[in-house]
Image 1 (cartoon, rainbow, N blue to C red):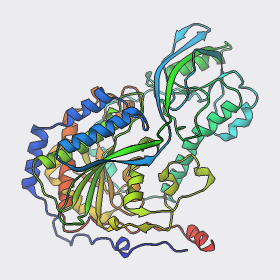
Image 2: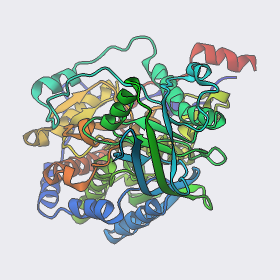
Image 3: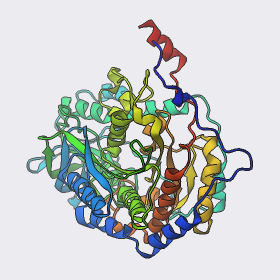
Image 4: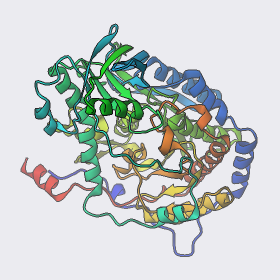
Length: 536
């Protein structure tokens, strides 16, 4: 069985002739800078999404409130066809209250938060703690018959290392030069990364099911960060696959102390009191979309996106109200200065990114391509993206040929320093030209390297130009990412304004080009996959 593909996918747009300069409308750039720097509303959006609505876990009332508010705000700004597009997800969940204590050998309150999608305790539960570091299914056998009635610490204790001295990071010239230098891939790093993600995400289900079957009364994970920062991510949102026992994310310091006390020969007991609510009536969740229409009956499309959902422990400010506010501000700027683009400029504020690109993947399947679903049993806990990833044959929908590019922002609230070209050599001179008016703002790096972990991957996976910007890290990776301090006070107005201005300019110039942005060679099935398909 051969894959189905149109010739337009195979024939990428030609690169610029040698010596040609990509046109840049500096008059429009001036107007974008004036509007974006002097009449910005980016912080108004940030404040409403974070201080107002707060955390936006997929499937929750707060996420739906954010969908509706962003839809209405985009309409207020003059965008057209503002709408919600749904996708099948699973249960919503909120954790309302938690109190966790070590009760023996001395009583002390612990810094802890419930793991997402784990049940409440229905009152206080108390029990003896056992440290059972379980890193894979291979470790299950060792702990069979030893966990009944126990509160199980499942994370290992790493060897002690001094903390990094750099918490707040700006990219310097040396750092950007390293990013720009192309890293030649070895083997198939994309597939290795995918397989590792499948094992990681599936293990959340497998471990909890094992502990439940063994009679454990609760599980406790060590937070991967120190300084009392708590990460409480989990993934058991699928209908019919809910966790049966409470789960706790415990601060690194308190986790390590408890294990140390046990290693010294003293028994440790804990009490846990958690209130949590599941939302099971509607298993759909949503993304928000809106348009600045292009010209003609069937204009092309330039898409800008960021994920609207967040984890629940903080307010989802840097991850990713920042990206949402920048994308929304970029299209507000373009409406405010009255641009009339040749192509439709579309904004997509995705739901379900944190659980596996649900919203952006649904957009691709609804609008751009059809791909078969991988029914391998190992993918039973995975998202739609993972089940369709790299699957063939791929049938293109009419909008595929009209799609020009996708631009994403999802690496915190740091300003833009450049863009990842995703191994697409033909876009490099284009992006260099588009960044030139913003060299004074520190944005000048174009790299052929790839980056991952954002919604642009679902577009790249089907052969369409999808890009994530290079950003200053600030304290996103060191402190904020998925932690309880991801709040508005850790975002920076000047950075967000700069990013919105550059995003607006990229969208405008992509929408006004004579041709779509150049595409890389078409994605193809691996030889072993093609042979397997032909055998069927």
